[in-house]
Structure formats: structure tokens, C-alpha cells
Image (cartoon, rainbow, N blue to C red; front, side, top):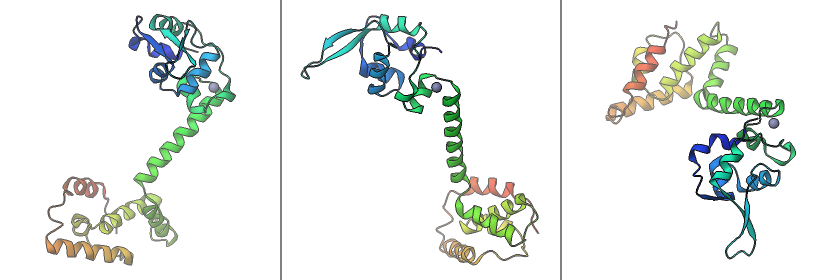
Length: 208
Ligand SMILES: [Zn+2]
């Protein structure tokens, strides 16, 4: 495994003194993690100095010592002592860290997907499918997207989607009439919806 300092050497000045806080910043780790790693021999070549005011002592490295450490094979990581995110940031690619990373990535993707396809719209797709109103999930998604355009009161969605054989759900109908009211008072006219509207109507397939 490559030493995590290897990615930081171009930011280390050999003539400058570094302490745990500086190392933590260089590596994107907590100071406590740096100290635990130092105890395990990850950052050799330090000396001790008295901490001002506190009365304790702390490790201090020259940049040259850190650059030398960056070139070494680091000791094995005791996985019971670090959070998975720390292990991953340190560069451990063992099976268990890889599994954690994959699960973490999935969670992030799911969160992003939830934001892009919110619960209300998902429910709408499910309703369309269970009502037998559509033949495929794709068709339901297209319809739900059209309805969302109506629900958010986009004037383009109500005028370009054409004649429809199915009525929108009642909550959308009231939202749409609210949009009509806004349009009538002229407040909707100045809203910067143009780009969004173009993309959305371009994505719509004809529905019958
Ligand atoms: Zn690992």
C-alpha cells in the first residue's frame, strides 16, 4: 500500500516544521487519527517539543522527515482503531474497505436519485401502473413527468401537452388552476422558466 503522504509531498516544504494539526490538514484526517497513526509508526523521524501553555508535549516533524516517510511502505492498519471513511482515505483497498466504499457510494447515489425523482412523483408512477393506465414503467414515467409539469404550474406543460384522454389528479388540477391565476395576474410571466420548459417539452413523448 502506498503511503498517504505520497499524495502530499508536493505540498510539503522540507525546511518547515510540521505538527499533528498540520499533518491532519495535509492528509484530510482528524488530529486523533494522525496521533494514532504516529503511535503505529506511520510517521517516523519526529522529535518531541513542549506544548506552550498546556505543559504537555507534542510530536514535531521536519518536512524532510515527512517526505522521507512518504517513500516508505506504511505499517499494517489496525482496522478496529479507525472509522471506515478514515481507512478509505488512507488508501486501504482491502476487501472490507472496498465493500464499505461500494455501500457508501450506493447510498450517495440513492440520495441523489431521490432528489432527482422525488417521492410524490414515484407515487404517481406507481398509481398509474396499479390503475392500469399505462403499459410500461417508461410510459408511466413520461406521464408522471408531464403531470409534474402541470403540478408545478409550468404554462408550457399545460399548453403543449395537447389533448389528453385522462384527467390529471385533482390535486394537480387545483395546482394548475393556481398557475392559471398566477399567469392571469402576470406574475408568472417574469419567472425564468424558459430553459427548463424547453428541456422538459423536448423530453416528452406523445401520449394518448
Ligand atoms: Zn481495509
